[in-house]
Length: 196
Image: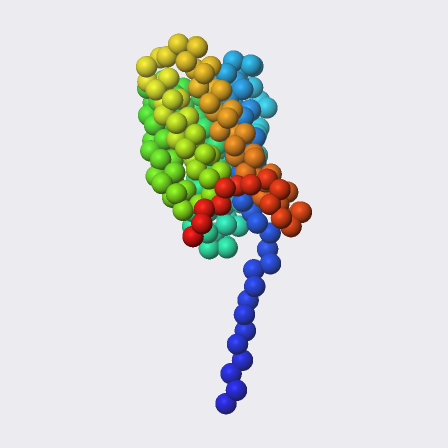
C-alpha cells in the first residue's frame, strides 16, 4: 500500500504590518492631541474607527487563521480598544449615555494597562521591537490612567502625549520594517530578533 503525504504551505501575506501600522499611526495622532498640538477632532475619531479599530481587527483575524495566538489577541483586542474609546466619546454626544468622568476613564485605562503588561511579558519570546512597543504602551496606559485619576496638570498630560508618540512611532517602525524587509528579501530595518 502506497501512502501519499500532502503538505499544505501557508502562502498568505503577513498581516502583522497592517495591525502595527493601524495601531501606530492612530496612536501617534491621538497622542499629538494629548501633547497639546490640537484639540480632539473627527480625524482622530475616524482613525480610531477605521484604521486603529477595523484594520487591526482584520489583521487579528488573519493572525488567528495563521495560528498566531499572541498577534490575534493583541490586534483584535486593541482594535476593539479603539472602537470602544471612540464609542465612549461619541455616546454622550448622541444622547445615549452620561459622559465618562475622569475616575471612570482612569479605571478603563488602568485595566488596559494591566492587560498590556500581561502582553508585554509575552514579548520576551518575540523581537526587541515588540518589547519596545508593548513596554512603552504599558507605560502609556498607566500614565494616562494616573493623569485621569489624579487630575494631573496639563504639563504631565503633554509629557504623556510625547511618550505615546514614541510608542506609536515604534509600532510604525516595526510594521514598515517587516514590509521593507520582505520587499528586499533581506534585513534592511532590524527588529532585533531573539535567538531561539
